[in-house]
Amino acid sequence: MENVEKVLAELPPAARKELLDYAEFPREKYKKKGRGFTFSWEGKLKDVKMSSLELQRRALE
View 1: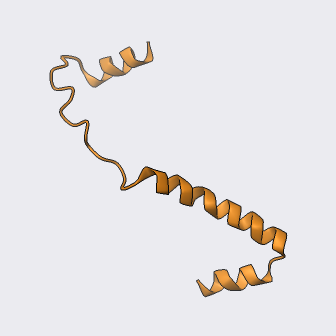
View 2: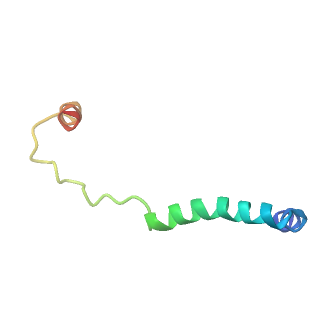
View 3: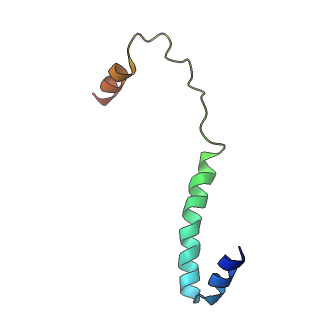
């Protein structure tokens, strides 16, 4: 982290702003996702008598 702070200190203000904007994007992206992927859908298709390939083809129709 010290290297990051050193590099930031050496940048002009406009470049610091640009870097901050760049860093904000992934932070917001991952914040929205919450705790990660859940399997809340697990078992919901147990009554469907199709293969995964057939389901995919139907979804693309």
